[in-house]
Length: 314
Ligand code: FAD
Image (cartoon, rainbow, N blue to C red; front, side, top):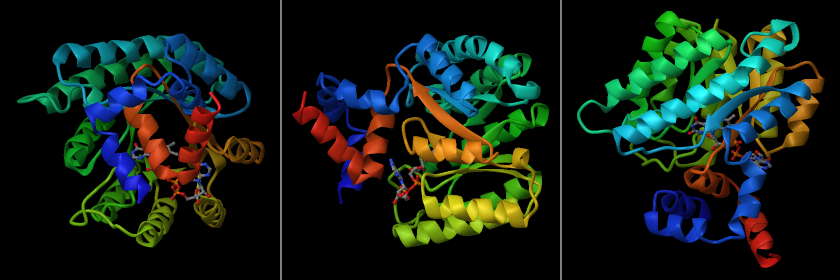
């Protein structure tokens, strides 16, 4: 019950003001967010890379409503890429894609009236071109279902010149069955997630068991294809399935990834990296942490309990 309420709150300006204005919140946010500045995001990336983990870094922000805001996000990514460039170069054996950035198109102007799609494409292209020069990869994050056609079209355009540009497919959505098939055929890098947004029954499974069953099917399809599956989950059952399926498909460790979020199941992240698997950690940083933070609370009652305990003891 609590999850949907928190997901609704993640879009509420009034709740946002209350949560952001509450000083003790910061302590809890720090568990999931690697600081506010680019320097802090890069420093955390360095620490994790030194521990043998690949990284994907998100300059937090979404739902930008004016062109100046979208340009500012684009510029923040250009600064981030400059900060990550040495890390990409130093990566063990010049491992391509050891450093990646994750971008949300709604932060790059996708929702602006009239030409939001084109504005977001232009900004995403600027970021991709700078990333290519720096040896950094790009992932286009997936947001709610109304944005998917535009996000897939933009990813498709970027992949024509930079085939390592990846995107995300969400197992909770009915349409994903077809999208997985298309991405598998295209041999794309695909991050597979369960889906973090509150979606209506017309487009999405409402039962967790249905989402999990779809996730299993998509892991199997992607592993059997020429795609690079990036299995992004903290669910031990899904991780086990991915490992077993990759072994059965005789996949090289560099041909697929496990991905987890910063601050969540750090033990699992290190355990799988030590076993020789590619584990990429999603590192968010920045001041605009509200939507991201509320989605993490919604996913897991234990996160809410952690939040309440921290508030009670502060
Ligand atoms: P759930 O189904 O939520 O939980 C299953 C089990 O996993 C739990 O029983 C528990 O054992 C374990 N688990 C889950 N969460 C935790 C936790 N916090 N601490 C300890 N154990 C836990 N969603 C999008 O919609 N778009 C995106 O672009 C996107 N990018 C993502 C990138 C990465 C790297 C990751 C890991 C997730 C991303 N997500 C994205 C979020 C995703 O859709 C899920 O909401 C989120 O991962 C929770 O689902 P789950 O598969 O981890 O496990």
